[in-house]
Image (cartoon, rainbow over all chains, first blue to last red; front, side, top):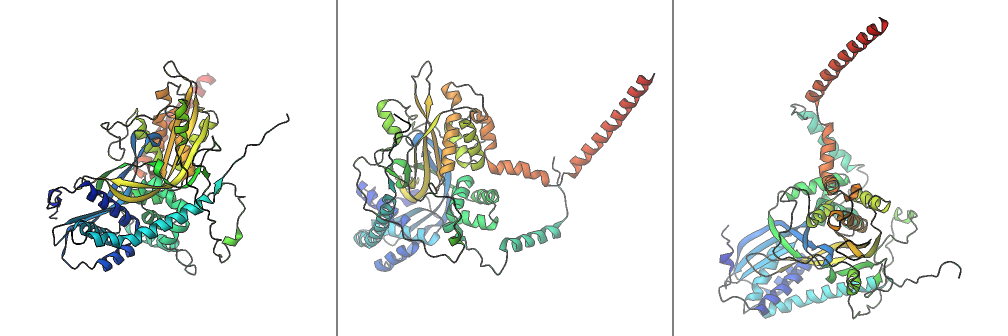
Length: 163
Length: 369
């Protein structure tokens, strides 16, 4: 495989923190989204340039860490399957994806979206295209939260014995 | 000792064909899809993920189908699969304080900040078989929904509440440079530190950990526990790939966390206070998380200067026997051909018997004289 970590560095200067935050946000959305969501986004974006696979989708493991007591020293509590992919666009933008699970097509599409986000020409439209997904996921989360809230309890302690 | 044998290929092939047939069951009954297992046997899937120590619902569901529902066989399949995959690295520690809560209860405070939500629970059900589920099921009534009351305090950990009063021990601090033990990389050595003990307990057999936790309640290494808090929900996992240099959100995992609080009478160095036991497992596995936190606390005997008098306090005993795959491997290997070994034992027993008979005869003749 032609891919090396060094070759992956963006052609221009190191990306600013704003770009990192935007990429992380998009990566989180792509991870939570369904494969069909990402297909729709790419349909909307209609990117027709070449996509070079720097790293074909590959499944591996990430050891998930917890913290002792929830807030203490880290410990290894179990592994999760993770799929990763890397692509390069015509303009030289390199996109990455790391996602839970083993969906190769979804990971490759997420890598393309990550690359498009870094492309000056496509950045804005890519973020716009992600918005409906963001809204839908937020809506689903709100429903789950309302369902959970309906199970909120208020316990009362009873006085016991005779006094 | 097991000595390799040859032969039986045709019988083995046919046995596996018969297994596939038996797995399918009555062909008049529709075949189970792995999606159905993942969706409708979700707590069993959670258990396979936890004890297989691999978070992947589809794989766990497939393993259960292939194993005909045999949990430990499914764990075996999942563990074997993971050995075929490269390890990308270690995640950032998950932050359970930022969990999207599905359930959160406390047995120590009824009015704790953030409140208590029952979520989807078997608690308070009547445990009566519901024959409606056997009939051609109606869709269940849609879940109730109420508006979420924004809670200004968020949902702090119960242990933080006691912490404010100094009545509970602080967590061991984060030490950035200290290596974190990983028993999938290095064999377990004793004494084992708490990070390794928690890793072993997290993947340990639920039945075994439950029984040990129960034993501490019955007086074998008593710890006077209270459930400070159990929470179930989704946490985001982040991983920092070398080539990117910043944390990448990988997605969400469902986990169950238990904070067990135990009375501690203090020592020369430490005033009386509450100590903590911790449990964290994949999926919704409340029983396992609670049992794990009990055993985590009892295994801290050495650290807290308590006498090690009970099995649940003996880390070598607990950690050496918690893994159901290791246990079943050693128990079940007994059914494999041991012909050579047994022949040797047979010869030995025959010789011992001959000697025994000779000795008896001598004894009798001496007594007769």
